[in-house]
Structures are given as C-alpha cells and as structure tokens.
Length: 190
Image (cartoon, rainbow, N blue to C red; front, side, top):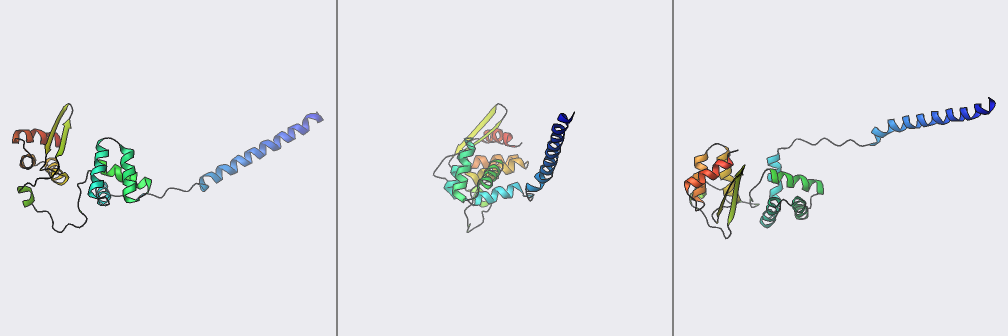
C-alpha cells in the first residue's frame, strides 16, 4: 500500500497543476486578444465615389477593365499601387467600385454638367460598349458617343422608372433605333 501512495500523490499533484494551468490560460486568452475596433457605418456609394476620385482616368479605365474580366486580385493590386492605400483598404475600395460603378470625374471640374450636354452628343476617340443581360437575353450597344458618365445617367433614368427618357437618351448617343433602345433599357430596370 505504501508503494502506491507516493505515485498516487504525485499523480494528484500533477493533475491539479494541469487543471490550474489550463484554467489560468483560459482566463488569460480572451484578455490578451485585442478586440477589433467597430467599423463606422459608411454609405457604400459614397465610399465608391471617394475611391474612384483617387484614380486617374487611365487607372480608372484599367481598373474597370480588370473588374469586368473578373480579375479581382489584379484590380486590387492596381488600386493599391495607384493610391498607396493598404491591402485591406484597397480590397474594400475595389469591392465597392465593383458593386457601385462610378464614372470617371476629373478632379477639378471647371463647369458643372448641364442637361444641355445630353442634347448634343459628343464623339469620343473610342467606342464604348454597354452590355445588359437578364436571364438568357443579352443586348449590347457600342457607340463612340457614349462614355461612363452618359451611360450612368441612362442607367439611373432606367432604374428610377423613366424608361422612355432613358431610351431616348440612348438613341441620341448611339446608332440604334428607339425599339432597340427600349429592349436594352428593359434589361436595365432591375
């Protein structure tokens, strides 16, 4: 019996030590981990607008080309290199820009765009492609009288319910008929 008493006492002390150590680590663990600071609520559209304002026209064009091609990592890298923001901030900015597309706006616009700008289409040195799809139906409009800003206004008109004005603006800035424009706008309404 005496031969078993000493090993049992040692085993009891070791067990008690393990329990006390585990308990001390359990208490210390949550305190040692810093809690993440709560993120302030921000308007995603305003965030996307601010993110787009940090880019030059060429960077803006390249970023949206990468987003359209599904190359998110390359888009994040481009934004990171262009702005110098951190990786997480660049990831959030590219996500916001993909979710809420922003037209390129020059840093210091000398004059505010007026409604008369819509009446006289300007020809650009490139062809702009606008694509809309719903289910199996896809429509494309390609024109050198469209750009991000004009197409953004057309989409806003369509989504706000003014489909006829959107269709008329699309025909004014492209070479498609009013019927084709209405079909295209119908895909943008949702």
